[in-house]
Picture (cartoon, rainbow, N blue to C red):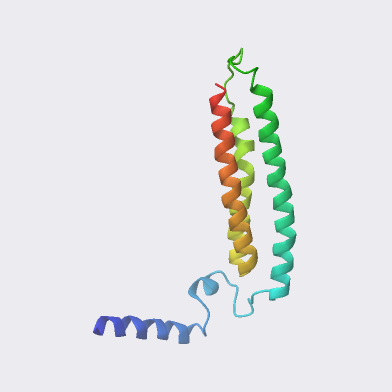
Length: 141
């Protein structure tokens, strides 16, 4: 257990040397004045982004429904033509999950836990919708 005590003492020495700040804060020049926002601000931002994300994902789901219905023919008949999926279509499909993942990371770095959890949940939902839409687009080829 001597190695554990050496590690623990080494971490304690680093904390004393940097004044309680993390090493990455010192390297980035952020300093000790970096504090997390209030819980009220965190909850307000989380609520605002939850409404915006819900509207965006509802729009994506509606778009999936419209595209899927436009490509389906009468029952018992296959679609007349086959088309390739462009890279632009896939980029549009995966834009919202990527934006939600970046937002989740940014709010985690800003030390806003409530907003991070909300953005993470919407990221999972957006990724699920993007997988479904990619599958739908690739099934038309």
